[in-house]
Length: 166
Image (cartoon, rainbow, N blue to C red; front, side, top):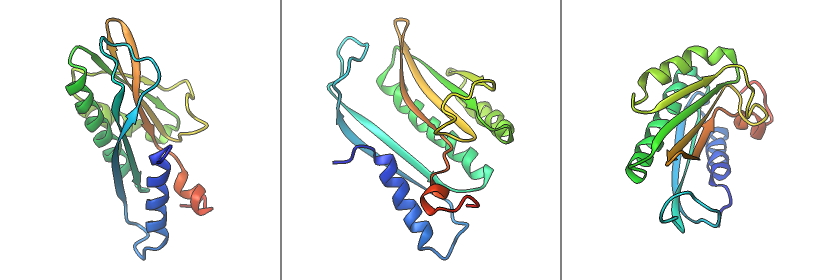
């Protein structure tokens, strides 16, 4: 049993990085779990069991991070579209570091035009956890929105390895 597979995947990738001779290698890890839901979910037949995706990418280059965030958002919104056919999907971005301004523009330009996108450059929402870019994916059904996915850039690799230069 795993409470947060994201941490497990991150530790796995950091360990691979630590033991690798290729220190510039960038890679991703994905897993899908079946979860028992106990909280209320606003829909006609609340799903008691559902799938929970955990996606982790380990890399330094802005290009890799930009491509990875777009890939993650595309995978998640594509899956949400299949299960929430009547829902309106939205993606909210927070720009937590101005060096990623161009990256958000590139990501947004590729996102399916049927998805509502908002960008917040003022608020530091999630800034204590995320660094650079944070995103939140919501689905609205009958004017009730549920946020079903979140992600962004974190500095776990440098924290886990004890090296802020990484």
